[in-house]
Length: 474
Figure 1: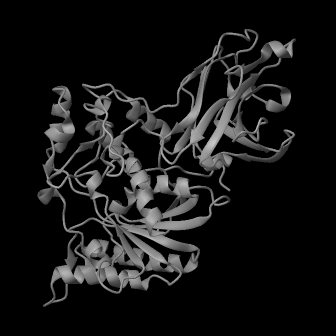
Figure 2: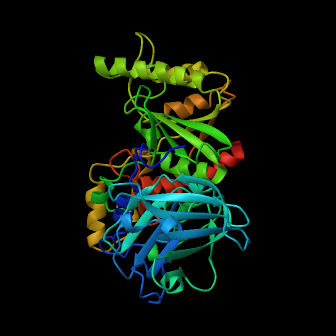
Figure 3: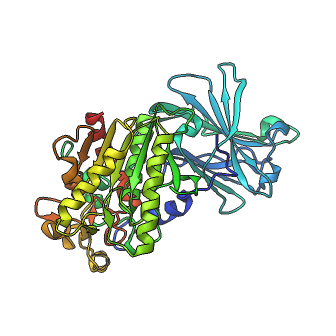
């Protein structure tokens, strides 16, 4: 179990939320946030008089927001003494809450979330801290984002209601339930985004078009450079560097791994959607410039050695983790290797992937190769920004020939060789390209953050398409 203290987050939901919800130049950005619920000023004796509350899904995360009429400090909250700000969760059609999340002070006026699991009579049967990204913009507000499994929520229906309490002469006058009436119905889905958003607009099975997204670009090319890959909690800083995504270990029903260079890491946003939907815990083992291959990379000597050390460490890691039965791999297409004299680089590269996969222990039942994405160009960002200023659809105005930007992927070729029965290929190129063109903006979402890496937001929208392909394979 990870608490808020020791867990380091690679992905900052608060920062990304601000960047990705900002209005794009030339077109209003679609609203990705949970709908706020207004509440009247009905407990004037309490600074925790709730004015707006929202709780719901954004992408794969749950987002909780409070805004109060008065100012308050975290040190003033003490649920045991009658001062609390909480949200209660009702599962399915149950009429009594089965869990509660409250804001607490973990010391030094640092915000945290305390989770309580309740029995049918309302008694607490489990207490723990939630891992998440928490912020306060002022003394009236509170925002937190965390994964659904942190509070044992699975796909399907639930409802919620918030409550604030304050100590005063008349307790009833200082207790505010918002929204009033009954709990708000909600539903947890693999990915919560606006209609036709991102890759959903190119789903071959569910045709989707949205005029509202015609001119949108999220994030902008400038903002995209600042956004990291999808969240991942550091497990080990030793070689191989390892971080964890997906659901908590306590509720996971399968453990997977994502392995490769930086072109594996940018797929984590899509795999996060699959992991949340299927109840998987994932380990990410990636190293920039170092594909999982037995072929010697065409790198400077020092980097070649560190890459070889990483590969050996990865193989040892799988031996120590026999519970990992499914491995996703991806690599930069067109990467150069050093081939022995008299042997073609192409065939040596293909054989390098095959040898590396054969070296993985038999406890790995499936190896799924994610075909590398098309590239962008050095001028694409400038073209997209110009199209935004001129209020033109950047996706079509700045499209590039598929034959120019979709490179041959040796790992995909290797995976289709005879005898690779445990190796499969998933190719999501149609979500980014037509038969002739590849698009820098799809469904209002910027595809690339730089020339070769996709944005974490677009990767997330690939998640439902990836899930469909994974479901058919597994």
